[in-house]
Image (cartoon, rainbow over all chains, first blue to last red; front, top):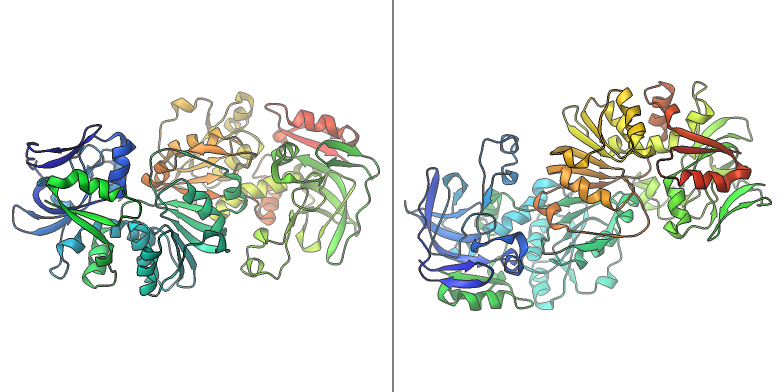
Length: 309
Length: 309
């Protein structure tokens, strides 16, 4: 089958072996898949992954159900799983990220319990956003955002735009700080206050969400967080960074790492049209032009690139 | 009066002006004061402070009350104070740390509301530990330690030894990781499990408290924290450090900065003999030998150096 593979280099494989679903798993014919910043980081060396890329998809099972799928395949029996933290199972594989071939291929397999039926009112192009929207919902799943909170989202990439929309629904006093006027205009059209001028943002936010996707985001986020406030870290990127930790102690800031989130609320928000994802699609490429799709996705300011399989 | 002053260099001043208590403040004749790692960091340039050093003290007010004092003098009227976060008042001064002469002098002044009477059962030498013990109590004030939690304290300096003792009182499953066998022996004598071998500590602690006081503590603490666990940062030190933040996001770790704490519970624990501080005193110096006291305090492995005023 066709598959976009990373083996130290990004390649289109035309005769990649078709997967078979082991017991407990289902095989999914992929309809389309999205390219995420994590995929771009993997191609730079992040996670040391080798295999089929991609973890955002919508597809059809061999039984004919249109589904999206949670990307972490857990063992279900270790102490971490039994505690309920299945997305942190130390034995997990992760679709297109850790030891499990991903979604940028004609077929994939996932544990059947990971799959969620897509409501009829959600299109394929919208369903692609279930996984990143779930990651945005992880913020409100992990911390309590009060409707009275002052909240700042840093970063107007795809994840930042989704996080801002999810946070808006709490009724909080929200500011989105980004670099790209056209992207921020999408948020403003929905009533969200925005700015491109970090220097003008004075303040003391109760909650700051770092979706900058680069090393500069953290220090800026820290400076904008009030004493005893919460800094939510959403960005994963390859490499380290230098920071002084004393201000975190002095201001008693809480830093909350936040990764994958729950699919069910993300699908509800999509079905109920409470989140606009249509404006977040950048372009569509057939899988045969997958390399070009990655090039487009890596272009500064690009929104979601979708690959039609 | 005699005072230990830092003006870019540590000096014993013999004719430092005697302080007068402004309205709302009380003057305290200092009986003795402790040297804290923060003082050692200030002498290296941390906080850019200039003035009389010292913030751990016991003394007697002009009215004859034996007191210890909370070190942050807040304005009481700003939004941060009105929210109850008085130790984070942006207008605050901090005894011997920010814009307020400290305790290593014959007299100091503090807002009267900052002072706490010392119970008769607590000696002067013990009362010196109220401030760092309060900082240890800040951990249990900010986060919920379950009696079923696995907890690791990194660092067997003065603060680490106090934090371990406070955490032991929760009934949690506690391990103290340090470098100095004699200090860890003090904890073992109280029934706390200890080790000097970081490499042997495999595991997955629900809560890790970093009292290492150096840049290496953070990465070790992160490695020992289970996914979705809590890493409490207690160390403040001069300078930055390089760390990869991706593991914090991937493991969804919560990092809690923790600084000054509440004096009332610290005094209760001292009065009730639930915390042993007697073993934590290293040596006593008269203020005339204050420079030597700082040298001793900066010696690797030194415990609390007390300065008799």
